[in-house]
Length: 244
Image 1 (cartoon, rainbow, N blue to C red):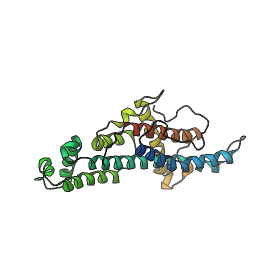
Image 2 (cartoon, helix red, strand yellow; image 1 turned 30 degrees about the vertical axis):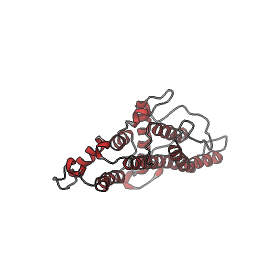
Image 3 (cartoon, rainbow, N blue to C red; image 1 turned 60 degrees about the vertical axis):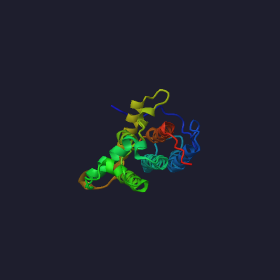
Image 4 (cartoon, helix red, strand yellow; image 1 turned 90 degrees about the vertical axis):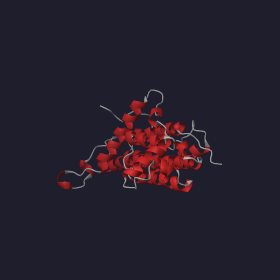
């Protein structure tokens, strides 16, 4: 059964990212993620301080671990949205002909027609529009999909990065001791845990966190580490588009 657990290490307070990412823009994306993760890190620091070194932790402290997991997945979701949107905007700005977008343009045109547009505007006709025209359609398609992006699982991310950047990003999610398949399984387990914490009510429809999934401290710590790793691998997989 897939598990999000990795080898637990001592909590690295204030850990910084970006040792392998060298592109200035991608380094900025990592810096933003680092700032997003400051909140769950702080929650776990408070948990450690309140828990102390002996005895069973108070039940009231469970909320800190749950909140840390929820905020970590939210940070990951925002990171994915931002990197996809901004990288695609750079890609779109760097081309003058829709044929330079290859499969992306065809897929967007196909989906555009499915959503009830005039079928006389087939991909070939759409390509004949001015750059402002067809680029606006492609840009709108991305915004449409991002507005419906609520579950940052490996399959969803794979599909969106393939469609808009033509990059198989999840294939690059690997590091020492972890394969791409394992990384995807760990991410999906983390997203499912977030779902159990935020979407399921207890018996009789009463929203009660105490009845929801238990979160171990190692789950919350490893969630942050996993997101950090995945973010670095994601950025290393992305092309850099020269828009100057």
